Image (cartoon, rainbow, N blue to C red; front, side, top):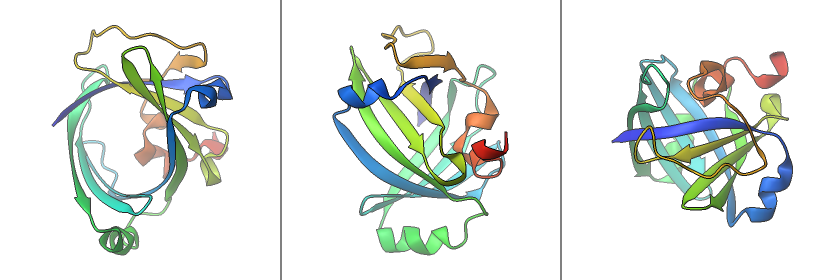
Length: 155
């Protein structure tokens, strides 16, 4: 239930060439308090409810709990979400021993490309593909919960 990940901006669409899977995601937040965010997500024909805790000082580690729920329940919960639903396409891109998840945002966040890689420890080594840009791990403005309230187009 502890998630360790690093987050980066993406500097080109070259990642799409290495993508092995992609799917559309719609998500809303029932609570955006940084100490405990509660997210409802629809990914294809599946629903998910996720609770995330406050991140570590570096932003790499935090509590995460997620459970599958029927898509009908996710749709009902989405109606309770705070304003600012996130819509994005997620690409899964294997790089060396790791899987990068690259999100291409739509709507008020169009133009934003963000990659995440999950790790087993904070100091775990990973390959850095050429399309990987500036690291933004721990920068709250790139958290989806914050993008829902302060979208990329307003920066």
